[in-house]
Length: 444
Image (tube, rainbow, N blue to C red; front, top):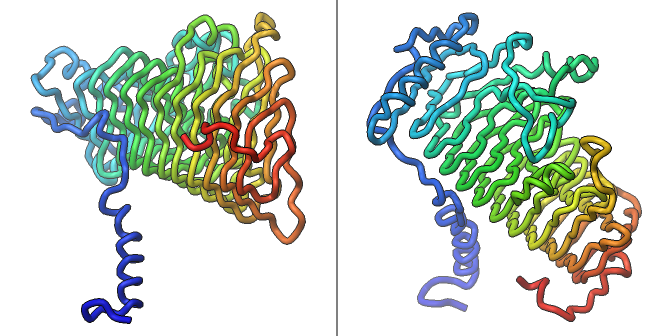
């Protein structure tokens, strides 16, 4: 058969090629909520006495440069240029209407002098430091109450030199909770792209109480044995876009949070309207997580096109009695897993408590979770969906979830206190998921 001189084989090949190339031309993106913008003024850290030799302390040059940006308030904002070199510095704050630009070969490296590290108040939605009672060490780079901040470059590096902090954690000598690598609080219109984040003392990128945040084209790295080095943790934040990034760390790659037990319930700020797509990575813990600190509520979460390898749990939604709050309207689709311990876990018994003041009767609600188009090879356990007595998980949908083990019969799904549907699932899940499409929630 021929069509105008083109063979059917050629036409088929052309269609396949077009399908393969289409996503490269017009991939769906949420990054337009905070577009990249240019600045009218450019200054260099070298203008303020900075020396990128890896030995000189540049804390004062960074603080002077950012003080100038903050107080001169140039129309259109200012770009702070960090040229090639290793720029050792202590913790510093950024300011509004600025771009921190790391040139190729530029490394901003955190000081390892922990005794001089500043302390800040605990987050009100956590009530105390996440690891230790009381305050917490300030994040390495911090923005508070800001608007219009860009952190970008030519794949320069922000290195937290976390080894000294990890050792303190292992030796149980920490007085306060370890610092994050980058944190924004009460801020809006934040854009983070084309940066390598590595060796964070604690969580890597933590937007908390923020709105309109774009994190894309970043690389986040930490050894698999580094404790609590989560990749990206949007926390009590809204309108967040996370996409096109590679993450390999010692804890969850991306974890959506919203406060801890009674403190998160009282603060009452949910995480909502969060999109996570085209993430590739590896972790001994979870690839994509929601919780377990979700006491302020989590809703309207879209997760797509995730590639996971050598990971503990592929998809992990976790909460606990005492958390309160809710996790609802979550859609996870097009996930590819290889060499994963457990494919899917939705659990109501995960996470510790900040103190003995939590209310065990504050039961979280998990409702409207759709997981579809998931393929896994080398998966040890398919999964488990185990709700809470008195607060069962409802409207859980598994659609076209295909998980294969390694040369042996895979362990069966485990279910309790859950209702929902399953269609096209391998291995077949538990009887609590009926497989009867009595409602349309699975299609949404």
